[in-house]
Length: 286
Image (cartoon, rainbow, N blue to C red; front, side, top):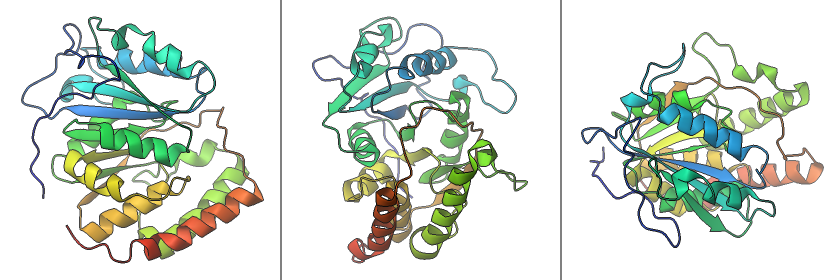
């Protein structure tokens, strides 16, 4: 298992390294630092409310709601939004916030890159991030921010923590999704489990955490940029011998997803799943 070491927070292009928050949640020097990566593409309508919710939670010193955990359980948290070539005002909304401009709670940075898909955006953010623990989440915060300490807790004795919408009693948070999405998800899971990931209950939950050394190792090897990238990273993690924890989390279906199920997408998914074990056949344990 890899030893963790402290590192500076990620830099935003053209800016100084953000200073620690002086109010609200006080970063604890004896707790690992966290970088939260949020990939965003044309999220102008949702990124503002999501960041309001996120920073409201991070700066709250009290106890969390039932089913969640307090932000005080974590070390300092820096947020890195990766703008995947948005054509709307997503980037402007992020850079105009107080947290991105040296304010009292300067914890927000923006990484801009040409549009290449969610997998590419996550990869760029994970390799750029320098927290002891690096977590990526969906920009709409379908998994609430108060679930973050569940992953950081698991990362104390695991290299990787995979958020799962499947609960210990067998119920599935995805029950609120449209029927066609659930059916396609089951087909995908069956294929991925058989060929790529093994018995992981929820490969596609957009809420996963890594120790920094594991994140930089795995995402440097990532080659799939489509929605199948999660399965590729899990496949690589198993080949490299990293310890993996499955963490049941709260989740709600947020409307507004731009993913449309088309024959071309289905073919791309099957093609990418098929080639993952082939392109990484020479990968060995760390």
